[in-house]
Length: 259
Image (cartoon, rainbow, N blue to C red; front, side, top):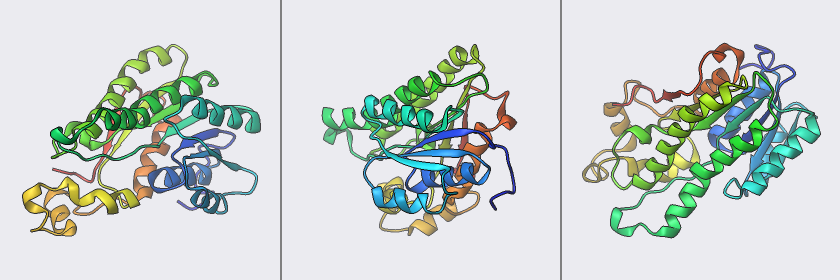
């Protein structure tokens, strides 16, 4: 989207967790392009965060190191955004980690780490963000199409994302009493560094040495390709805007017609 094409988020303040790379960076860019002031949370890649900041309007974005696995760091991110910009209107929770592993290989440590980031991290991001939101606040979490599809070795990750969809459904009733909406995006395969590293693992094990990733996508997706991060970000922008004022408790799948 060309900056200035839409002004849906003029005078709005947004926090984007996991905002330095991939879908999170695209979300931060999209919200800023539509007028938002943005606080970008990142866990470790300071260079990527600073590079993103350099592309956003001067004085209208900050980057704050925050590992969402630690709720105190998430609270500090949100507090800094409110202190810096005076309010909070949008939370886009994009931080997450991937995981593949067979049942026999799973460990309690892996379970704790995946759920700490993908599930607990998002829950407490909501808790801290909602405490600062007024009526009209918008919260958008991140699930995955994996929450509703069977993939070999993906049980732990899929479970962590399915829990997010349940949180969104149930929190909608509670937050709705305050005029705050909460929804989730469930992305399909997206052209990010995570897809580069793990994309082949989504194929059936017997097909991984037979079909290239492009061939596999061509027969399992209506559009036959990965999404661009900007295409997924458009969904976050919709749910964060007044255009989605009557939508809450729902998970929107953006998967290119995957089957």
